[in-house]
Amino acid sequence: MNELTETDLLHLARCVELAEEAVADGDEPFGSLLLSADGEVLFEDRNRVKDGDHTRHPELAIALWAVRALSSQERAAAVVYTSGEHCPMCAAAHAWVGLGRIVYASSSAQLSAWCEGWGLPPAPVAALPIGAVAPFTPTAGPAPQFEERIKALQAASRGVTP
Ligand SMILES: [Zn+2]
Image (tube, rainbow, N blue to C red; front, side):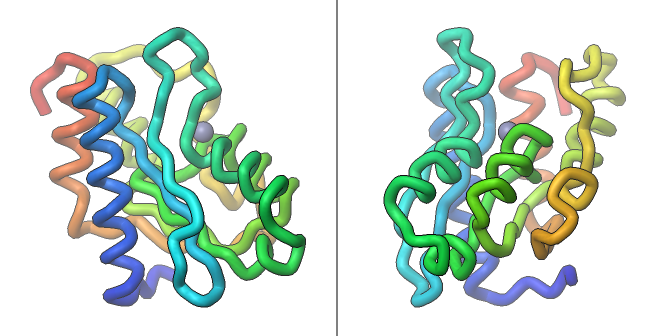
């Protein structure tokens, strides 16, 4: 299901903006938001790992917020938009709290390939696709419209040339 609507692209663009804010503040380039079934942005956040806690991913923050603030029906109907596909930790949290669809602008496979091409060591957590961790969560992505911008952000945050 890779069909992205204009609305999807609008929300992904906001996630990329959040990723830019994260890089500008010394964090890693990831941003995410949670959309209710009636199209309201309920929560948004961006990566906050610079102080050493590498679990501070926006997708995990969304899952933790949603399980406190929303009913199970509201969570199931909500959509998470994110600049980069969920890592296994965040995909697991997403599925455990019963959130709905995930739409991502760039994939974990893309990020792994970029990092490998830049000669960087692999991340400590396997770059599994969401479907390998949360097999019943509908997903859409990547969105090629954002590829070059996200690749440039990832390069900038790692001090390499894209
Ligand atoms: Zn994550």
